[in-house]
Image (tube, rainbow, N blue to C red; front, side, top):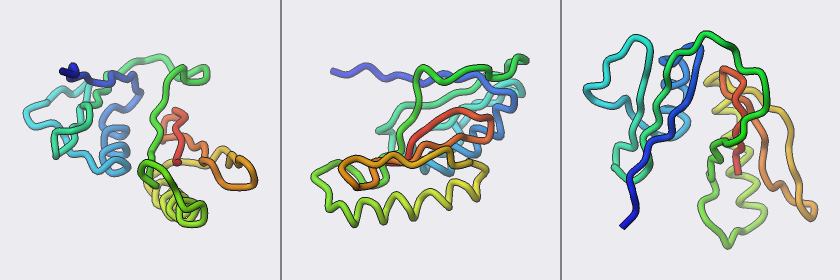
Length: 127
């Protein structure tokens, strides 16, 4: 049996990051979680892990050692053109929510993923 777990994160503005990631992942605020210095979101279907943020005063200073990959194309095998279309459709939606594009990574001439930053500069990928 798998262990339920929560991804814990630091943030300058926990509520802003919780709102961004809830929209990016299709999550909802965790019912009953009411902390002015924190925020938590959950998968409404109860399948994915919870994600929580706690307010910290220091800014982000280095590359993440761990990050989230949004697998918008689902699991393989993939039609390369369809996969690229799904990735390219999702990126502008995330930019509209406050993310920024860092770069695209290509493998064997096909789009593998897009590296992005969330509103506080944390790296994540759209694949």
